[in-house]
Image (cartoon, rainbow, N blue to C red; front, top):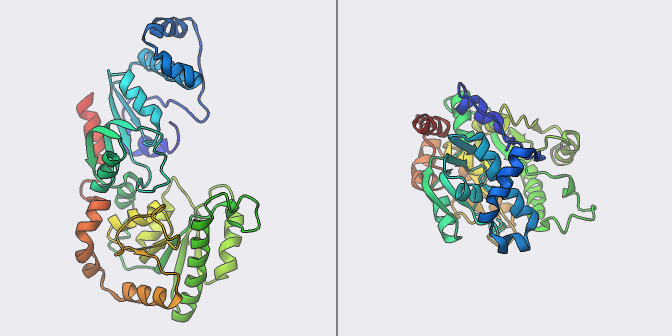
Length: 354
């Protein structure tokens, strides 16, 4: 999958010979050799599955044929939540398959109809291993090594050892439909957008009352101006808006430069926790749909005074004391090691498989 393949190309594959199997959109090649392989594969078809999901099943067999022709020694993907990967692992057994976790997987909104199966699974921490097992997913080899992108950011930026620039980094989950006047607002998880809007309202009051420096790690790649207008409606010019440069990891740099990281249902908050940052998830949905973490990093009360008190305590707490009291839980959720980041561990596994 070409999505975010730049990270793999730049930090893992480097001098290796590789091709990218593109899926956005997936290009289907048909020639006599491929058709011949497909006809040969007919006798192994799962006819029951073919009956209720004809095109999906046929596509799985087509991919098997393509991989048989390419004959790779290693298959690697940053698209770990794809059921197609697990089915390919079952069918094509001549390669080492590596899947890298690209986002938090604890949410009850996670699609449990997709049965994930991996060979080598590089996940965030023991929490994700437990989530996999509890939901009927599986992997032959689990590697709880933390966030792939966070590990890269810790290598390329030297911000964690410097004095913080910002008191607070607010992590954006903005979407175009977050406007309450849009018709699809209610159908697109209204409860979490209400939490997001209410958090930003309280945050605006808090920074004005305490004269703090705040930055916003923006999310949008294609609607930058619209997202900028959204944030200016809350903060005016009181917040530094940092555009989302995904390839160059601008959001990771922003959280590394901040004393406290706050967000709503964002993986980046969890990644910040693993990098030794003070963090706080806000969730006013009265459910565990979006985050089911311990109350030590989640705030669930829709009350400004309690919100203010919680933030004041976090901001004043020395960072080394915060890390010390949260070290065990942080490693459970996001097991990052700055001396041995995920991309280095993955490269070593590839070296050993070739």
